[in-house]
Each structure stands twice: as structure tokens, then as C-alpha cells.
Length: 179
Image (tube, rainbow, N blue to C red; front, side, top):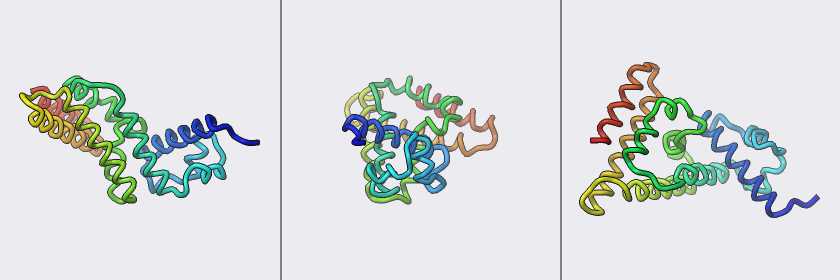
């Protein structure tokens, strides 16, 4: 039975969503193509109708996950309050793709790194639109510094086994950005 173009696109979206959650939660190396396809509700054999390899899937997943995190306009301080929350810290599978996939991307293909770079650029541009500053250069600087602080703080809070320290890292970074 031939699958419609719309169904192919929906299946691809389901694969990317499943891969995004699994890669962010477990790491790229720990997830098999068979796991991704099962989580997407599809057969393993159907994978190659969408992607040539796991490496290609990783690159497309980075692109997909970062695009999902860039939906809509945000005000920088408001975004920081939501981003630097215990709920976001604890939601690895559905949380920040930059924190979860960034360290993974270093060891991936040039295509995956290029996808991460595009996502970083888009996030900086998005945050710069509402960042404080007298001119475009100052707003961009505030956006880069704030984004770097948020990503670093979330990563540090996630790797800490001391919940008080993790909370302090999130809270102090939030306060620093709001200043």
C-alpha cells in the first residue's frame, strides 16, 4: 500500500519527535534506530525511507529540536525566569535541546554541528530583539551573555547531585540576568 505524501511527512515528524526526546534524555550513543522507530510507532524497516543513516537522523533531529524551542517571540527576563526553573531542569527529554544535544553535537557530523550553529544564531537573534541595550550591538551582547549564562546554569544545575546547589545556580543566574 502506497503511503501519501502527507502521511510520509507525518511519519517523519513522529520520527524526529521521538528521536528528539530519546536523544535529549539518554544521549545519542545510547539510543538505537530501532528504539526511535518503536517510540514513533513505526517499523524499523521504514527508517530508511526517511533517513540514510543514524548520523543523518541526528543532524535532522538537532535542527528539529532547536526549531521547536525557537517558536514565538520572548522577552529576555521572562524567558530566563521560565528557562531557569526547577521544572525545566528536571525535564531532560522535553527540555532545552541546546543543553542536552550541544555536548553531543561536538562529536557528531559536520551537518549536525551546522544545524546546532544555525539554532544558536536564531536563538541569539530572537533574544536580542528584547534584550536591554542602547543599540543593536549592546542588545546582541546582552543576548549572547544571557543565553550563555542560561545554558551554562541549566547544565550545571542538571549535573549537580546537590539540589540546594542546583537551585542556587538557577536562582543566582536568573537574578544576574534580571539585573
